[in-house]
Image 1: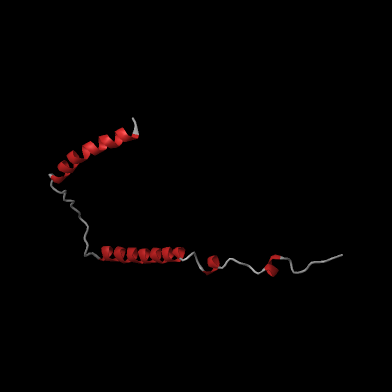
Image 2: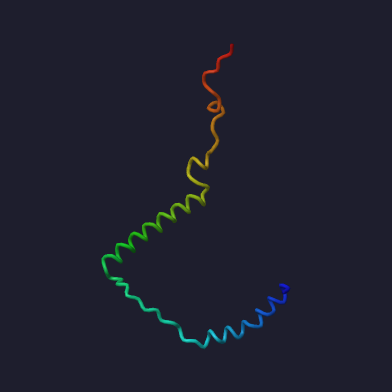
Length: 87
């Protein structure tokens, strides 16, 4: 099937899909999670710490990496052996 025909077919179905979705009642999800329990609070605190750490790492990467990664130029003298014997 040609791409234009596929797009046209999908475009024809969109109004019907929108009507079907608009007339349905929202699904209610039930949960037995106790959000006031000490375990939930500990997990939430641990997750917040992990998210903070990840955001810090993303910020470091966005700046071009750490200090060493941003200044990779090594002095030319350190590239050569110190003791060179010429016989």
